Length: 335
Ligand SMILES: [Zn+2]
Ligand SMILES: [Zn+2]
Image (cartoon, rainbow, N blue to C red; front, side, top):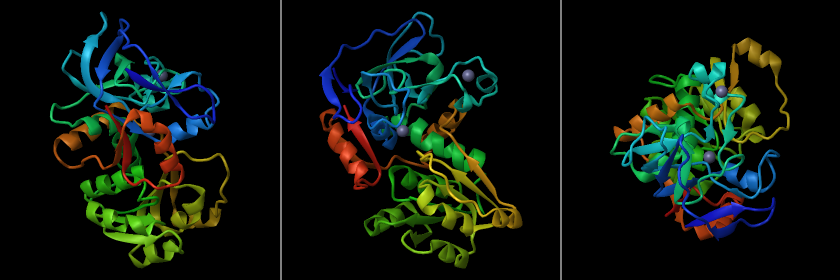
């Protein structure tokens, strides 16, 4: 089978032939229909993660149908539909034991420290897998950990989004933002979508954004006119941060996700104190979040928004599209 392998930082990814692996005793071999392509993969290819082991099969948005299981695997059988976390948790630390494995300090990232999912057949340790209801489609299986499960964690577990809440989503036209709009609507929230791209307005309206504000302006003033935000899902970072903060209502929360750069922002402390605001980071997803996201797909509450399907040989072009912000919805490799 073909695999997309990063051999050197800042060089094009190679498409090589590799063998279909045999699962180790604690592993499951899954066959993918789709693999998600994430901005994080582009960051990895450009040297953002110093721990990356080269050569590396990239990709961490992995899901599919079980075809073979190792001798010690207990919870999965061939034919099961599964989604993988984007990492392998240690399973032993206090975070792992309390269902907060997204915070495991010993977790290993797929596609960075452990060979990833840009190949049709992937071997994954059982501890990273979640069983999906049978009616979940192939694209949703691969998006359940890094997109929908991650958003479930951020919007629901961290943000407590729900009916009667106004949620501002920044970067709403991006691959993550567009799914965030869809999910916040599914929770019954009123959604204000921020974007700098006029060409993404139609899609945002179609997905159900109640209001759209222009990221090139002082959008916090527009959000305030709409009644302010109870929750901000900050998907962009430095560029929108201060305007997002100024959009919050008293007691409002900002949940920060995405590939946040290490550069600092300035914090108007008085504003945060006077409004009693909370700013909180949200990282990845737990197995419970992935399960909840898959159930939402199964019940028809959300569906995958695939911007573009590509062949694995087009991965470098896909990176260029993401770099130039020319993609809306998720880019997915179709096998
Ligand atoms: Zn991802
Ligand atoms: Zn752990």
